[in-house]
Image (cartoon, rainbow, N blue to C red):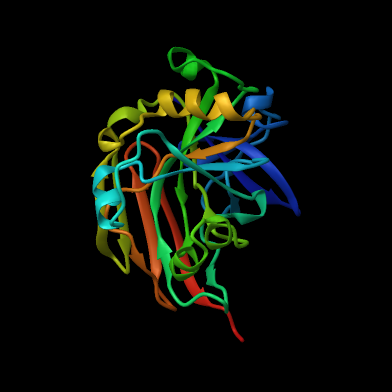
Length: 255
């Protein structure tokens, strides 16, 4: 297992491999063959960025039975796909801002994976060859706009609506990881990824039948029951077993 971060150093985004309490900066993204540059820095105090540079974020809707039920929706026969733009990516610790056009802003804690090589029409049995590692995504949603529009692009696509991180972790089994979302310290979501209707290999096969995934692209695998609104001044934390905790404050946009 290896653990990676991206951080800002002198205004430049830099990849690094985590080694205990320090990091070893890399010459490029690890999935692009980056190697340690010979330096070392303390992990504490780094200005962490999202551990990915996706051309797109492919998200899965209603992938847990309990969430489909709480949304008063039927159980889908196939994965429901939607996209978030690359501009929605936000760093760990970055404020999640409720836009002035939104009245209800929801958290959705999710396991995500990052593709390490170009993937098109990948059989589920070969998925592990194309997935570089796993991270955490908060699929922030303007719930009232989602209801008004009847489709999800606007409600899911605002700048900063995809906090991701803090780590990108390789060689873990995504099939049975505990996911916990806390809002203001109170547990709001608690489930195992074993409860997903469509597991990671099946998702990669389904998605890549439709579109090519590029190195660095992110797939966010859906959220369990317990989604709900965030208020100005809240702090939302999503923990996934074996990966870590993604924490972001919540702010209202000033009119």
